[in-house]
Figure 1 (tube, helix red, strand yellow):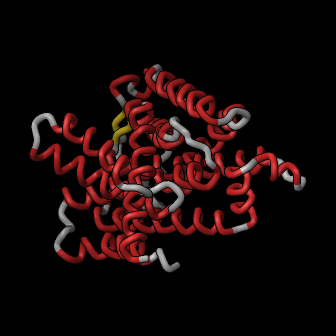
Figure 2: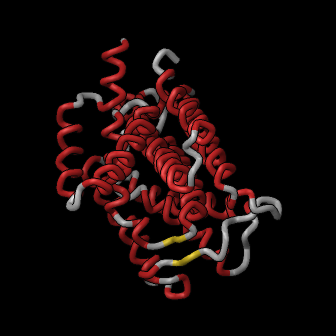
Length: 307
């Protein structure tokens, strides 16, 4: 908890922002994107820092959750009590099936096989002509909550995203602090020692992979409602690379670092896009320099200054 003051401050700032004059359409849309991507980044940090599983296909679980919303919307199923479990369940099932194979590998092989599964999901989404194919699918409306248009209210949606982010961080933190998390971290350091004391790392890693995928599905549900649009671009390896960059930028090994990484990534990307014509040529090198010279990421910088 000694290090928790900063993420708590960030969450409080996001909660207070609409009440302090940042409740306009542009600001709330930007903050919603930050919080949703931060959810996905925290779940990926849970894998990378907690279990040592560096996935380059994590965006696929987010995309599967988003496409579950789109497919149900196309069939006039728009109630959150049905759509949200479907999005989480579909992403968890996708993670279970792909993780059962991927976790049998390690290192570069694991990275490449998650990339391959992610690309399979991307091309599958591109082939769904009934749901827009390459052009994507526009939702008829946001998902209803017990018949109400709660998610259509800008301010209400903001706090739904904030609550989901806080819950994601708390859940992942509690899991890593539990016996389950200690086994994950021990297996990350030395899997053979874990096996020597009678525990198999495989089922622990698979459960962690499914949990991260389920959280990704929840993020996909929120992302589909935030943009009211779903496309294969959200499943591409580039989006997975962005999520991994957020984790590294924030600091591997600290869940709350992923929140800082997501905030910094999105704000820097947005600012450069508004002020520089060829902003991607500046954005890429800046991220590389930040990773090279910020040892321990942004969270490591904060801990060193206040430790």
